Length: 228
Image (tube, rainbow, N blue to C red; front, side, top):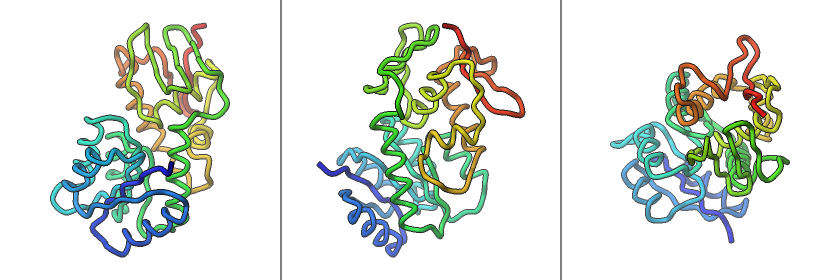
């Protein structure tokens, strides 16, 4: 059964290109041209991933991201014409999984969509259940518990945590974590990792300002506290 992608953009040419390339790659594609229709379509159709333009009329892409995140952890690939790092970081902090800046290659869009969906299938090569101290990750089901309490993570957040948890105590650079997330070659945007780590800590840590689990190694990257 083919996966469903919701493409949200108010530029018909971009919607047409995205639809053509995604359908050629085997996806079922539905579309919306504004934010309110996007939220309605997501709730009605339950797509597997949303390709979402930030610059929408009415309800903009950031508001749509907030609404979708309140409803669940559906993967989101943001698309923006704004060459503004703040917009990208804000979108990522709201829970988007990846981003593309216009103009973009339709082939790259397909590669990003496939890479994000791979995270929902299964992170690469970990054992089925990972336990590190109070943390427990059920990899096939993408479920996370802290001291028996269930934590709702996005696919990107789960993949990041699973990557760190496979080798507790090992320091991962931002570049290495990007490689674990994407599985495709594209320009590095390493500050995106900081946004995802911030979201992960907000859900995981008793006090995100003083993390116990995901630790910063200043000037290098991140590691998971080794509490085996």
